[in-house]
Image (cartoon, rainbow, N blue to C red; front, side, top):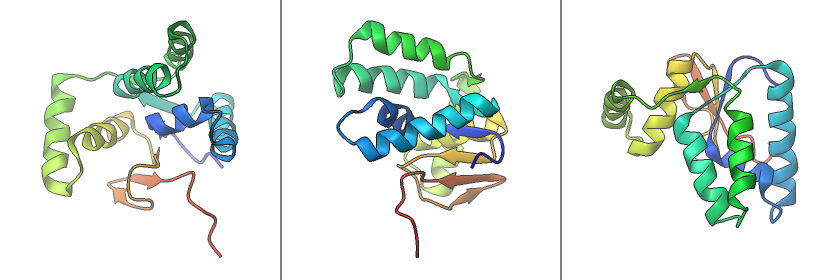
Length: 142
């Protein structure tokens, strides 16, 4: 399933820990396990911050558990949020009609060299340069 460097958006990490949606949790866990095995997963400091916030606030995860998961994923390549990333994302936001925070994710994925961005929140199949946005939770087609 994993074909190249894959940037993971926050929702994939959150679903892997969410006991309320078992099908999505199982799928997210399989995808993340594949990325751990292949060594092809990448994310950003924004994703790690959003995960911690969602895990502790929405999933009611104890802070120490959320912190442990963040520390684990920090072992992957992590794109840092820099002033230049913000400027580049603002241009992407203007040119491609992404919400600013989504543009930050896309720009971080581009900067990482990923060929795939796994996200439920963005347009499945959309391409930006060499990057393809893929919704891993989309229903299987005919």
